[in-house]
View 1 (cartoon, rainbow, N blue to C red):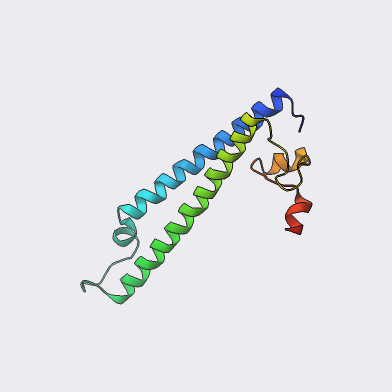
View 2 (cartoon, rainbow, N blue to C red):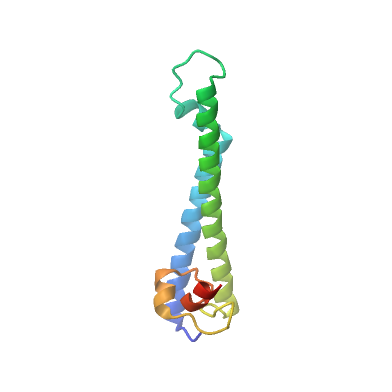
Length: 123
């Protein structure tokens, strides 16, 4: 794709923002999960019973939620890193499926796009 230097700089900055935000989110969810804050702060523990079944269920739910949020942030992070590498290689904006140009409108809406919309629908 023949993007101007100005356009490439614009997308590079957007991708760096996405990467940084995703990295911060991963750290936040990792710390939350590692510190076990889900079991201390969010279970609403009003029972004096050590391992109340309701607390255990809430804890498992919070762990699963944190893992899901962490995984989603990691996917955004990796997509941004991949797109930044493509900028460096000179292949940013080219479909991974066909090699055709990804429309600028799609890149505006989703700077981490790997393929054209019509190709995504077929896949």
